Length: 332
Image (cartoon, rainbow, N blue to C red; front, top):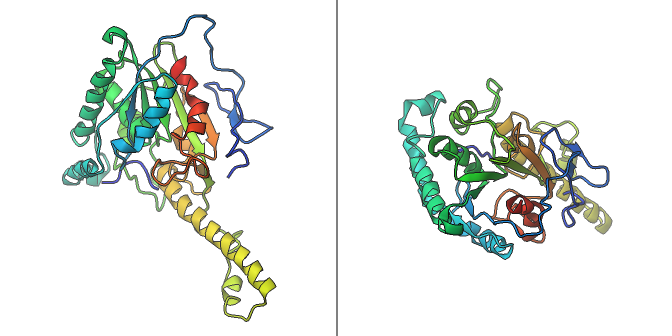
């Protein structure tokens, strides 16, 4: 069963400082990072704050080892963490949903299909509690991709008294619009259930929602009249070429590959948010990764997954330079 995910900016190598608020963000004039009017609250105390341990929740198709480097980065900041124990083969458990009539009606519910993942979260919470001072402190949730909305299901089912921060990384929080041609809800109703039944996002002293989206690539509609790809360019491929013409054609081939990639990514975006020509992290559209009521942040040049990422040329949410941009939320 597929869940919630379909499948550069000049600031990629130098992400500028930004400000945040829970209102609609605006775009900074000096770069393409998202900013808004108010800074995050900072502590004026001269004493070191108590660091909350973090629980890292893997995304769809990922396993625990994909996040071990992130855990080491957090440790360098003084944040101990526990990763929910998930293997890639575990996700095959979701096939159980195929035997439910709700799956075929598009009204699937998280339980009992996802009980196995909720249990792994609960085990990781117990592990993280042992890292708190006296075992009585609160924890931070870091949910990547589907792990973010599964964290919301957990909070609804198990309570949020032990959690003071839910930070999501490239999480497709919103279900796709209904009734759009060619759009199929890949979660088969799960995200509709989350939207209708889970607590709304808040940014309060007791529980803070921070939703981080990436802008790695802009999608494109499958049929785009403005595309550089045309029948004329195809017809010219078989003609004799000089060296100069060959160099020019190489650039055209690069543009064509880029166009196909944007179209492919755009079709993935469309399945998530109903629109292809939007920005996103290559898997999840920016608009789907934000929640009303949360502190919403967008980072440019950030790729969706640890798999296929590269800290230098294709950083993901857990790459060192990107973590530096959001670690403050775990330290407040």
